[in-house]
Amino acid sequence: MLNTVTVNARDILRNYKEVFDKVKKTKQPAVVISQKEPQVAIVSLDDLEKLRQLKNKQSTKALLDMAGIIPKGSGLPADLSEKHNEYTWD
Amino acid sequence: MSTPGTSQPLIAVGDTDGLIAVLSSEDVNHEKALSTIEKLLQYDAQTVFPLTTITETVTTLKRKLNRPDLAEKVVNQVTLGTLSIENVDTDMLSVALKVFNPKGSKQNTLFDAIVVATAKKLNTKIIFSTDRWYEKLGFTLAGNLFREQNENKND
Image (cartoon, rainbow over all chains, first blue to last red; front, side, top):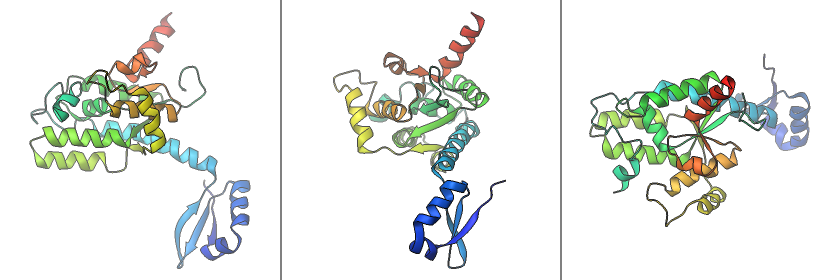
């Protein structure tokens, strides 16, 4: 489970260094509250990299989900992938 | 699984031809593209597309698809945010310009060179494409990666 801490936007303005140090040390994301609502989260760079990798892996799945969304009979040339430069720019 | 020869995660950078082959059922490379994605998924690989691949793909499909409804659907799907899109900045353009040969084949464009720049930025050698130009530059086409690994297993 991903534990988080909350922090007010005002606290960040007053003492951002402490907030940053806490996130880095505990690896717990800090959810920033402003106008009584969670707005964004501050995460460690390690977590950001993990999020990036996760999104990139989901991108592979998304690619599969998009497969064949242009059905047969759409009128696209069969060699469009190989000759897309000619079809697009010539 | 990691990129061969490195401890880096397996990342494939997508080119326009690969993306078109996935999207279009009619395409000669459609089945091959599907099989490659299934392998990428099996190996928990990441897939990233340079912003220019998305713009080039959308431009091509918009020009060639005579059905506006379908064109709209494709544009919406591709730009929905589910694909990982890598921004292209002037540093990457500089890298691409070193690779791009304006006097070379008309088949290989600055868009392709930006795919190379993206792969260099992400420290990967894998390109999701069927264009053998990338192999000449020392990259491995994603479809061939798994074939090479199966051959190595059987050796």
